[in-house]
Amino acid sequence: MSPTPVDESKASNFIRERVAEDNRTGRFGGQVITRFPPEPNGYLHIGHAKSICLNFGLARDFGGRCHLRFDDTNPTKEEQEYVDAIMADVRWLGFDWGEHLHHASDYFEQLYAWAVQLIESGKAYVDDSPPEQMRELRGTLTEPGRESPSRRRSIAENLDLFARMRAGEFLDGSRTLRAKIDMAAPNINLRDPVMYRIRKTSHQRTGDAWCIYPMYDWAHGESDSLEGITHSICTLEYEDHRPLYDWYLDALGIYHPQQIEFARLNLSHTVMSKRKLLQLVQEGVVSGWDDPRMPTIAGLRRRGYTPEAIRDFCDRIGVAKADNMVELALLEHCVREDLNRRALRRMAVLRPLKLVVENWPAGHVEEVEAVNNPEDPSAGTRRVPFSRELWIEQDDFREDPPKKYFRLSLGAEVRLRYAYIVRCTDFKKDPATGEVVEVRGTYDPATRGGEAIGRKIRGTIHWVSAAHAAPAEVRLYDTLFVKPKPDDEDAWKTLLNPSSLETVRGWAEPSLASAAPGSRYQFERLGYFSTDPRDSRAGAPVFNRTVGLRDTWAKIERAETG
Ligand code: ATP
Ligand code: MG
Figure (cartoon, rainbow, N blue to C red):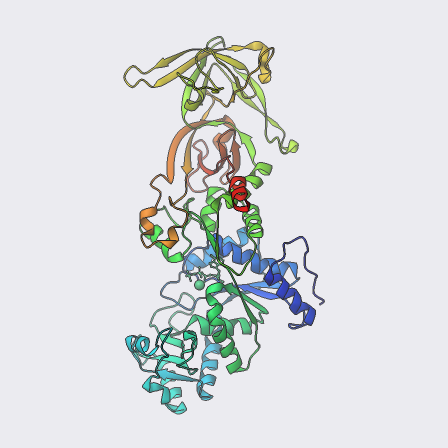
């Protein structure tokens, strides 16, 4: 099969260029086989999405394939729940690994045999050093390490001890298998790295078959090799591990993929380490991994983000070799752009104030026609009931209107979206609290559809008919952290935003009463909202605010590019 040329519509980056170069020189026979290798110890987040889009995107654009491989080498932290969630999230993002679902644990037997091969060639040994001693002998960045007394063991003794490690004869942590490389190497990763540790823990796939488990560096390159991966793409912190990746493959003399590192995604106003995200879940700071405030794919999905918007975001941030931080505003910009094209417009009132139209006959109902999506004429129109008592936003009435306030105040006129122009004639206050509890007005029958016959009307407000409206719970989200870089601080948990969630009870137009789970809307003037897939019920819809209408990205971009 001849390689497909690069899709020129995709912005190029240094990885694409290297892959294209390898194709030109025929280094891997024109093949492009990548993999996404998550450890099932948590849910995927937006940073993983960058890696997924990169790996699956390269495979797609070069006519190759991308494997999903679970890096399940640490049974103490891994769970089936995470495995299932990861597969669901990759699929939801729009990618397919076909028949290539793999697990590092599929290769435990082969990895063991290769470890024996390294022992036999004098390149690995069983070390009896307890963990503290091993740490001490390891040296530092400025001092070389020192050799463990076990390093001089005979091959026969190593083979015997390694077999007995596997057989479960020794306690957890009492022995390790180490590669025999160079205790004085300037790169600490090459100072006789551990290949196996003893851990008498059941594994979610292999059960109790094993009590020794391979370390990441040992399992990873060898798994890549077994699967015929051509380009093994990982984040920058593995750059220092590449010499070890190469050493293992060369020592075994097996097929050798190319490791390439890129800068991980850091996003503002959130944390991305799985350890920290797990803490937020375990400590109940959020309601779970899919809490809509989480940067997880499951959280973003529940919040109403679309896979298209996330993929667009990953395209726009590009792939580079230097760490940087991406503004949350860019992600939100992508979501807004996508939803603007697709989301149906609806009216809902989040902080309701009653408006009584005094000259509208009680009990009379008229249906006005409303546009479903001005960006998409094929979305058509719908009919919305209008009656004497309406809900409007508290914000849309002021007793003492400031200058340039074009909404309702005593004597002022405003357009009720799709309906009529009303003039405010009176309002009522709660004598105890001073709060405005009702606004009264009259409508002009000649202005049906909102036409401003003979006058200039600057304000248009949304409304719902009180008798017809569906009660709606609406969850308003703000960033999870108050500072842009919480990850940089030890006291990151003190930077949690105490008002990251506000729940309000409002009213929505009747068609929203039975909105399907996961449907997305633009509530006019308020933002984009979607029904909560867990809690929303027919007749009692629950909405998550996906993203507000105000786009701050253009401003940030201007400031950055000067
Ligand atoms: P841990 O924090 O547990 O080490 P991890 O975030 O590295 O986890 P993995 O499950 O090992 O998670 O990641 C799977 C793949 O996703 C890896 O190839 C990793 O390089 C990539 N990845 C993880 N975080 C990011 C990120 N923020 N940006 C880009 N890629 C990422
Ligand atoms: Mg990792």
